Image 1 (cartoon, rainbow, N blue to C red):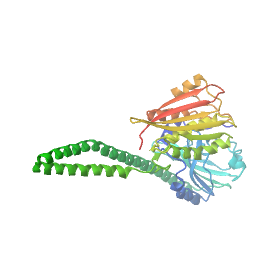
Image 2 (image 1 turned 180 degrees about the vertical axis):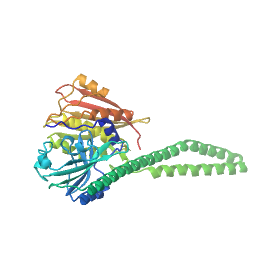
Image 3 (image 1 turned 90 degrees about the vertical axis):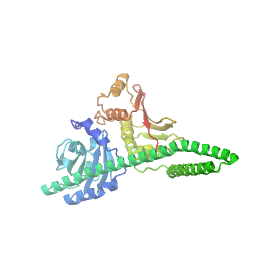
Image 4 (image 1 turned 120 degrees about the horizontal axis):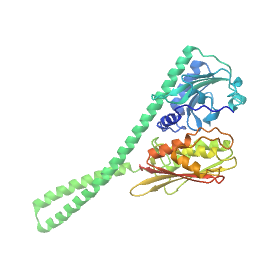
Length: 402
């Protein structure tokens, strides 16, 4: 089996991809026009917009072929992201690296491939725009130049989505500040109104008309501001529903995303993937910052090292207190387990690549990326495992509840 290619800057490449904080299920419509345009200008039947993480190639949009993901080691685009400006395979059926792949031996029985890397401004290839056909093709230089322009526009749209995500987060933070301000002014205003009422009551007993009129104005002004604070608070009160505006999650939304993204991987290996949420906190919204990258890599790793017929269980909970809220993610599997030395290497960020239970290629960067992202979010990770007894990953991440 050919050794899978790994870019020299793989860790930096993965970090660059993680900065986009993408939900791979959300962007079919965002790039569908560009995918269709790529197929039309090259005269090919199929085009795909692929992003490649530690374990998986995600087809976030496409034309002519319905596919959402495949193992990274099975993809052709894994070669495109290390090959500079482009990667072309004239006949997949006659190439030792690809002739036995499912998309060559079975439908759609592909033969031709041409891929352009999706290159960020910091020179990291996070994926590829590729065109494919059931027949051998040849692209003219003019068509290749058009493909490069389309690939560049895809990266620009990814950047736009990133900016929009940041703006949504800023808006969420502004709304949170608004609520805090309203809460902060309620206390002193209530005190002022109470004092004014007390003086007013005393003044009525003494019949001090001028004092009464002055205090009455204070009372009315204070009451108006307090009503304004109540209005601000009530405007922000919304019924908690398992929906997201793109920048916020709750546990139910996160569960749905995990199931859509990773149940296909588990089923493909005859592994039962179960996701559980805490009923007490499953509807409380919180920021989704890097959560799909963290949970996704942990789940893919668990599937990789669990034999067919086994299980992977994901437990999600949100512990909310007056001072801090903590998201807890537990990924438990019935896999091959890890010895003490292996756990120490993972926690130190220098674990080596190993193959999965059915020979899945190991790239050696998934858990290192998880550790880096968790530390960047001021969280913690613990690992409990023994050889042949499965593994439990426990992650705790402080959250801003929104």
